[in-house]
Length: 214
Image 1: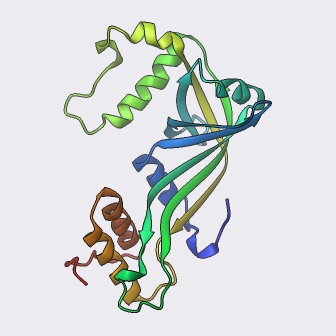
Image 2: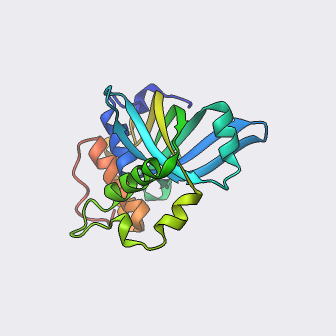
């Protein structure tokens, strides 16, 4: 990942938070079939040794499975809040427009599991994470099709080798530009724009502008 020092988080916590909020990773590998990528939801946890690892699963029919088994390694890319910041929103229009974003990248070693116990553990870990806020979380045994579908799923664990993060959220901009940018995002609306405005405010420890109008 291309790095700019001012966009790099000071510690691991912003990266962990990003993965928790946006658990869908682009899993990238390279093998005899060339470069391949699959979007997969993953669960980040610490293993018995306290090291970061991911729990995941993919279809047994996925052609990328062969290259992942062959290489035993992959690149995981997570994207958080992101969006276009227009200079049309700024009082000082001499500033160029830009694209702000949150991104995390993990190089991992992948170990595949087998059998019903490993498959159940991988699937239930994901459901537990995603249903954590539900009053009555869903359980695998509620689906009569689970035993059939689980035969076509391959579980895996991905041990983290390296971690990189890039959080481009208006660092280096003046207070006026930051405020105008956040107001513009709020006025633009939509989940992505609102999330990006919130991410920028949180990074700079600012309150969101009370009024969307410039």
